[in-house]
Length: 546
Image (cartoon, rainbow, N blue to C red; front, side, top):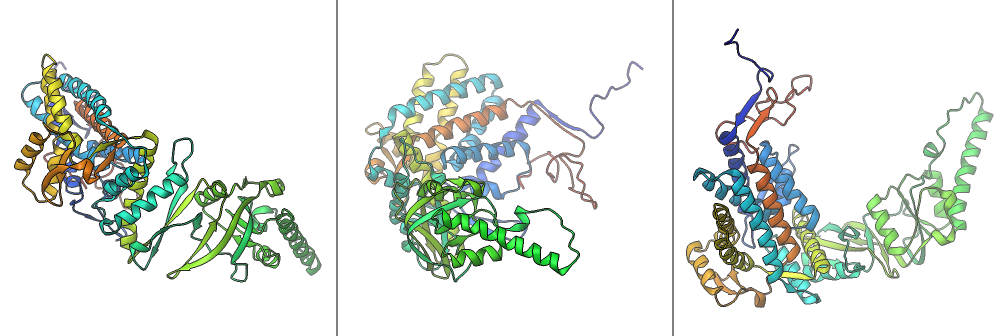
């Protein structure tokens, strides 16, 4: 009995401890960073993502790529979630987060192999991140004019399929963000992008108000209304939603009475709408055919099943109050617009709500030769809107093209020399890791990495604004070249990458439930006992990424 083994975990549970667990997690992060890294910068390459239904997405947007990949390795999934949070908070910088985190973990692995304790590496990285954020704030410059905002937008869109029209698109993005600016902030949720395939990207434009991808419920309804009085509501104008009671009808007379009562009810609902003075109705729910008939006779332009996001934007643009009960409808709840009309762009009908007084929402109509083009440029515009909104709120920017990273490397090394003990080694490795951004920009442009990095470091002795022009292959003043990045995006990227590294480095044990890491997926009945996505080949060797 003394030699009897004791099991505290179920049979089949997989456990990887200490260096094995850390090695596999670091390798997974490095593989993910290697996949994403080639998309960074104006000369970055694209990835083709094919979903299970065969839908193809071609993009070099980091957030879109990682969303489309079926990541199986747990640590890599943690890194993907960190990148997604970066996208949600500041709208850009997802690729940078993963690339920096992968390089930080690679440098940490070197320190661990040299016998440096994990806790020392984590502490050094944490101090280095705090110092880097402090230094970024010191080297940031003011951005309080429209021209700087345009440069920020152009930089964000570079290399994302919109290069030949990025000046035009940047102007649209900046105007849209400034139009909805309120209390020093621009909520980009109030800007929607309507994609219309056909024609050129240069034909894209900023609408004077709101554009929704809807046409009236009937072609016989008005299609052009001046001095519009707008009602937006969630309340349905269909009897199956309003009256769900069950009735027993035993004779034709009873059926006639029931139909007459239905018609009367619909008439009363429509009468309440027309009595309020409304001549345009946007309903989030359904509308009966009979109601459509009476609304058409009353000359009310009517839309049904309008998306909630569109309803909210219409309310912000026109001042209309969102009604959940038709009994609350009154003239003071209506919104106003000088012009509501239907326009056909290429083969697509859109509804324009224009001449709104002090609108807090706006729309961009994006054109493109094909659906794939408009989708790719739409993602570029989303990134540009995010960085412009962040710049408007923060009021500070950094010089791009690798300039701010090289400056950080120099100053962090100086800072590291002032720190005693082994923590200094971690800080110096952190500084070295930040060189990955300019290195990647150079590599993706097919240029000479070693010589250009050396030239950049030498040039920074004279000016902190010197970066790499990936189009000419020369080092030059990036401030004069107009390569500008928001301070908030860069700070958030460093903080997110640092937090992800700390989280992964602190893991010294991986315990997975039975078959969780080797599951073959659901059985014939559709049950999956893995508890986790399937990971072919287990965790031995190179962690599978997809």
